[in-house]
Amino acid sequence: MAARTPPGQTRRQVLRFMRERLIAGRPPTVREVQEAFKFRSVQSAREHLEILVEEGKLTKEPGVSRGYRLPGPPLTPPFAPVPLLGQVQAGALTEAIEDPDGGYIGVQSAGSGDELFALKVTGESMIDAGILPGDVVIVRCQPTADSGDIVVALVDGEATVKLLKKSRRRVELHPANPAFEPIVPAAGDLSLLGKVIEVRRYLEK
Amino acid sequence: MAARTPPGQTRRQVLRFMRERLIAGRPPTVREVQEAFKFRSVQSAREHLEILVEEGKLTKEPGVSRGYRLPGPPLTPPFAPVPLLGQVQAGALTEAIEDPDGGYIGVQSAGSGDELFALKVTGESMIDAGILPGDVVIVRCQPTADSGDIVVALVDGEATVKLLKKSRRRVELHPANPAFEPIVPAAGDLSLLGKVIEVRRYLEK
DNA sequence: TTGCATACCATACAAATGTCTGGTAATCAA
DNA sequence: TTGATTACCAGACATTTGTATGGTATGCAA
Image 1 (cartoon, protein in one colour):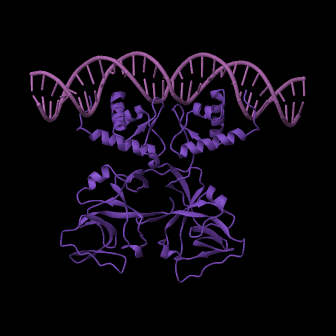
Image 2 (cartoon, protein in one colour; image 1 turned 90 degrees about the vertical axis):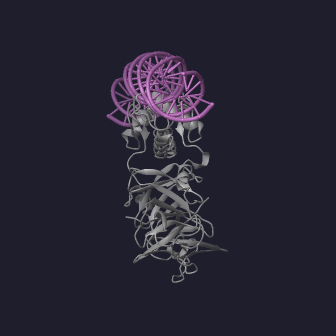
């Protein structure tokens, strides 16, 4: 028999194991839990899991394999790998997404079918909106956006982050920095890549 | 027999179905694919899946249930679920981490053994450092930090985000906003929770 | 025609996996 | 002590699920 552990200790580690696997999109079987914790009986793993379900820390679909889930309907964070792009040239967006320079980062996407990409910000034009050079913005591809949204648009063949302002029949791209001038594209000449839905700043490494 | 569809058409829809499920963290069984497409034979589903694997659109782990995966770009693990805390009271950090109010968010942490938590920022004291109210900071628990680091410390029983400045024998917590005053804790009386390693801002929902 | 490929079906088998029944040992409180 | 609770084990069984083998029908090209 394996060493007896203090009450609740092993269970907490089981919960952590489950969360890691579920968040990574690879729900384990009961026997995989067994092996991960070197139990000599399947039942040991199953008991921990069932208790976690009773405690509300996990949920499960009975009878289905790999059926344990993270609870709390909205809080289950599915992870999508999102391509991190470098410089984006006009028209080359699709290819850039297919074969990203910067690799991929993990994002919790609300809409499951959303087309997302990430972009590293250069320049200080959005500094008053709390977007600094080096920050990464996560963008949902969409052809239109509302006034007040922070968007990514192609200007002179380069992707830039700006605040979208709509007035009457005109569309303007405003920087959030008094040192920069607004951009007013010719009517119907705005190529909008998408809307910024998240900003990230990595302070280490 | 179900209606015969043009070559490749059904397969493309199968791939879409698989992507949705896999991104949602719920890999389907072959039979679930069968039902989703109203095939009357398991094998029909399996053939589509195997061909998708041959084409490189999917990968699979043979013999394991729900073993189909999205190929290529690795979700570079370590991918850790990090507890998102609300208000943190003095001393209650450990319990707050165990049972977080705000659920969990996913973070790619460099050090795998790191103890991390996330905190929702209130107040505007760090606005000049690009940290706005409502932003989420991801914190690595550590008892010390370097001068210039952005840290989370307990001040008057509340967790606050500040810039750490060390001079001689004194430690100061500076806001990044001229409207706020620096905090100078009594010598040895600084309870540092950890260092901010990432800042996130969610612009939707 | 013949041959080949694709899309789908029917049925079976074996492996993976969830579930159950009963047991041992340690800890704690009445 | 007794009883209750917790942590773990052993072995079995039943369902779910991956896999294989062979068949039907349609379209296309030589």
